[in-house]
Image (cartoon, rainbow, N blue to C red; front, side, top):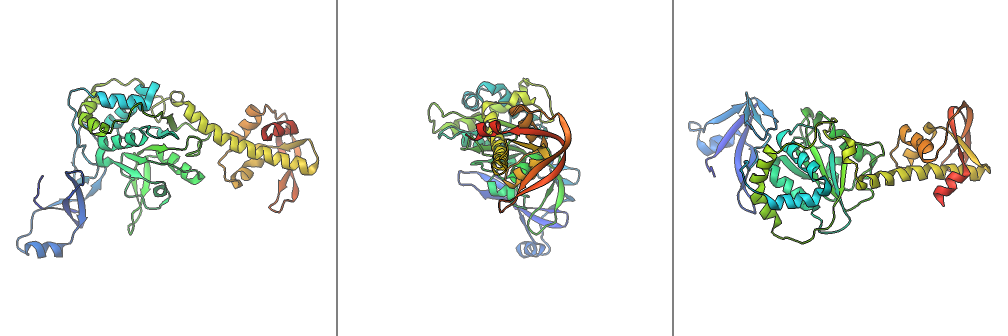
Length: 396
């Protein structure tokens, strides 16, 4: 390790480059804000060390032809620790086959794109299982070993914080024990997964816009509702992970030794897919039973909320039907804390309930106030007639 003290100036800020010792051995490079007065105290006014000068920072991800300096800018993206070397990687391949199962080729494509095309948008990968010893957390740690400081672990609260400078410039944002069942949390991750620009903010500093290329890999013990995924959503790839056949306590060390060989495989392997969407993969390729289970759970909640509201109106009015349009339920569903839109509600009426909207005329829709009173509201549109038999079937 280079022990000579090293200083750089970025813009008008002086920085000392230090090597922080790690528990597991080795060192991690860190940048510490320094002052010229401290530098003069350490070296004397006439004996200052050489200082590298840059106009600013940039973030240029590249794993094959990495450059620390681009023009007069210092690259904050970190070089990988490992370089590709020909060889076998049986432990990594066995582990990845356990994680991706019948979709192993898609899984290798995903990792290959991360390595060879780090700016390519990719789906949000979510691993779920309510069982222990499945390897979900080990997979996150494997990605951390693979991409080093360009991968970072986040908590659920990190997404809710306004300060994001510690993860917004990374290639991978890894979340263990995911539980983001608030609409705003889900929307934030979904929007970030397809964003090309993002506002980064650190404590005490102004917000600034950056090029955004981070991918999200999430794990959860909740198989039904770790995050809100609507039926029409195509940005998620969800896999249910089965328990491992055996517990190899030395697996991480074995895989770490094989990383150079795995990178060599990714460099020379032919992709099994071609780009078919902005997130590379065709949505149909990523449709798994685990994804459909989460979508169904969220769909059912909206469907039951609409049915319960209709049943309440019928009970109070003593009628056998409710006249309504999809837009009548938007605020009702959202006030119940559920995420929905006109497309989903219309799909419930047409596809799930088999209703038709042939009549375009005036109708009365009833609003239930917070104190339980009914208020008839005159509306006009191509309305549906919801019969009692449908809501009773759903609520029975």
